[in-house]
Amino acid sequence: MVVISELIDMKDTLNRVMRKAKKANLVLDTWMEEYGFTDNTKPKTGFIKESIDSSEVTEHYNTLKWVYEYNRVFNLIDIVSDYINEIENEINKLEETA
Image (cartoon, rainbow, N blue to C red):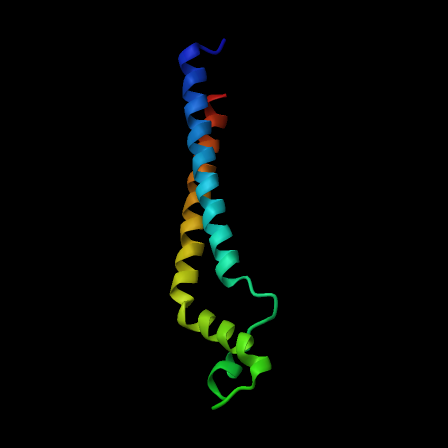
């Protein structure tokens, strides 16, 4: 029989898991908002041309953004990965006690 204190512990664990999942989702949303371009970036476009015409401005900007902010992109992915690992650990602990 499950004791009330065990139920409270499970509820607390589920609340922690939910907070971490929401944080991971926020980071993914930020990543998609900032770097989820509708067209593929073309690195050569950002560096080879000396001048660009008006139809290429967005593509040029998106390519340079990806290149210059690569570390930020990588860090966002790393943060989400950490949250997901923590969530998995919390769920495994719950399964062990169930």
